[in-house]
Image (cartoon, rainbow, N blue to C red; front, side):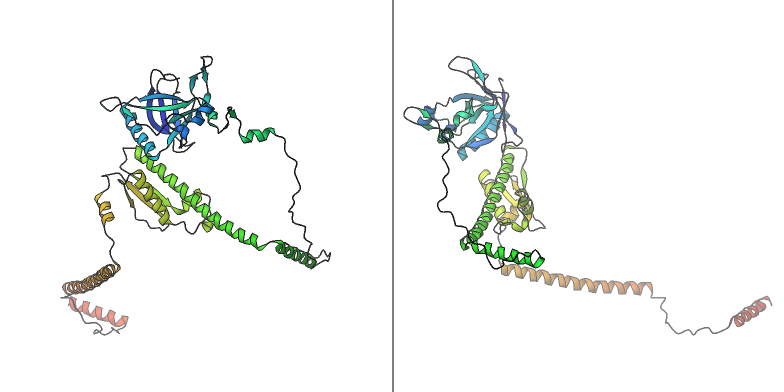
Amino acid sequence: MAEETELQLAPTPGAKPEFLATIVPTENDCGILPFEITLDNYTREKWSCLATQTQQQQQIQVPWRTITITTKDARSSKKIKGFMNYLSERKKSAIGKCSIILGDDDDDCETTTGERGCFVVPFDQKFKIIDNNDEQVQFQCKVLKDRSMLAPRRSTANGIVPSKTSLSARQPPKPKQPPTNQRPPTKKSSSYSGKSTGLMGRLLGASSRTGAALAEVPKSAVIQAATNKSMSKESAKLEVMNNFRAKVEDILNKFLTDDSKPSCSIPVNMAEILRENRIDKSNAPDELTMEILRYLVYESVDEIGEDKWIAFKEPSEFMDECNITVYKEGQAPPEVLEEINKGEIPTEIKAQQRAMVAMAEKESARKEMIRDKETFGNVVNTLYEDELATLNTVKRDRRTIEEIQNMIENQNKRQKT
């Protein structure tokens, strides 16, 4: 086993983990932990607390071992402080699977447990700063070499007895008894008793069988089917809301641990959310609206950001999608703060403002038209002031070609003489 262990954190089981801290056990606990541990789940069970084991846990003899851990550098100390505060506020402990080597009390030998070990970071503790430069933090964890020891069992005065499931597995199965309240078979409808194999005969037979089947269905079953349909829509709505809330909390938790990002964007796309939950848009719950999804985002921001973060809805061209930008404390730009702090304007004042804007636009258009007319008139007068001519005053030349040629020859003779 390793003297230094890299502690990683995953938002959900199976997701890609991210670095949390580099930890070093004390000298007494050195060599127990592996090179890498991934925390991928949370629990509020009593066995995850750091306090003394309960009487029930002592009876079932769960061999927990508490170890003291110290962070290696300042980066790990800073992340561990935020993580411990997160666990303490939500009253839940972080757990992870790992391979642990623990000594056996019976024969004093070491046994390797593979991936069956359990590593727990309890929430009911306070970290200790052991370095003046705030570079090392010390806290406690619990390890168990086999998770199967946490299975629920039933205890008696004489000791541990197996659960009901194991006892029932050993007992022979009871013989099946015929049902007493079985419904008697109904007679088939005799509306059509012909044995014709033609098209009309088959249609009549199918119609009679459908009528008989509908007669056997009670009205309570129809009412129950409608109730189940409404309940299924309600359960689908709750499932979509829970999945969306978990996705938003994962984004905000990553944003909380990343000090280099002043802001993050949370997309809210109704079509994408329905697609992720495998719900057709035509069968979507009616009460699942964009307002509810935006409220879930604002609620998560207030909870994780401790009312210090600012959530701002960016303008969007579509009704079923938008982006909500979350800013850390002191990182919001002035225009966002001005937009958030702007009060709601009454409807009457909005109507007056629209009327004033319309009148100003009309006056501006009228003045621009007059100015264009004056400009055009000035240009025409400047260009054609000396070259104005009256049209349609010169008559058409009706001379023939011979007459024109004779006139040209006479002019040439006169010039020669």
